[in-house]
Image 1 (cartoon, rainbow, N blue to C red):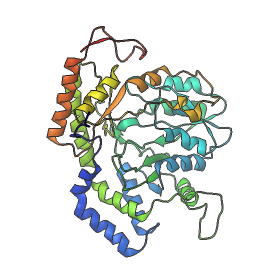
Image 2 (image 1 turned 30 degrees about the vertical axis):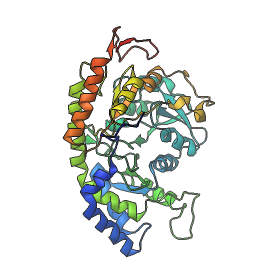
Image 3 (image 1 turned 90 degrees about the horizontal axis):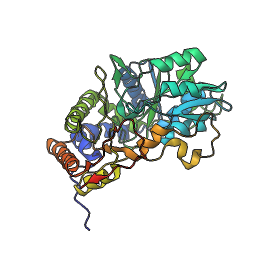
Image 4 (image 1 turned 60 degrees about the horizontal axis):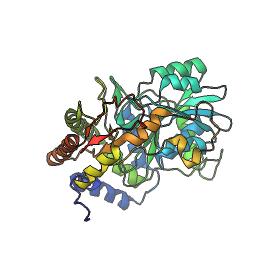
Length: 395
């Protein structure tokens, strides 16, 4: 069978570049003409702009989002013997970075509605060795940190925020990153704010931590050929910094477009067997991903791709079930039923600012056709019943 023509790609970075071509080419050419490719005024400019954007005092650009979490953990003095709570439903880098810092990730199951770390289960996972919590603002939805701030105060724990998917998100009027604590970002090309290669940053309002982060990212060097600690080679280069500076002023408009697309999709799916994400009132969800839940996920994915609509799965394997962490002797129950259920039911639909009206209509039409064809013959509460329950369909 011939492969279907792709009508709606999962992400379209070429479309975004097309809208910025002249401005972007000029900015990149300026860096090439300067001959200053690592550090320098272009990086410093972006760091100031991004700190202002999120509402922090300082920004430290680093090589990628994984390094951002690792360096934040190291500057916070986390290491061997420390346990750090992380959600079981997240990208591998959240846990990997903690391991790279020398500490032990402890996986916590998530809430079935928000897909964020469950605070009650987080408290159950705390032991005498627990030193920190890494909440993840997943899929672009700002996480309510009040329960975790209460846990941090009660048990004397540090919070490091993983904001790799939520550039510009806010809860109420509070933008993520404005807390002043260590907050980590990825600028991987597909992110809401994406570079043209790898990139990352840490924001904070602590001048001492900022100074230490800048030393750590530069081989532990406060000055050339002086090395006060063993550090990393983790620098955001000038070419990526200038790409990010060009894109940053467009973020508010782009995030607004994502929300508009999400409202259209939610409206088309409400009341159907395909469960759309909840759009929280009063918060600014920035929809890095538009993740639905469906008990017949594999059939839905295949159906959409036959229609030329690309999809993704975020994430197909829970972190605690990956080969890298199978042997981890972590406290608490091995099973994470919500995360394990999500892994078999979630599907990410196309979501980016440049989606056209025709593309959105194509996605909605295909979803509605699928809903019409795939009618469950047995009722089910998709948000509470386990994924292992067998559901039959009339086709």
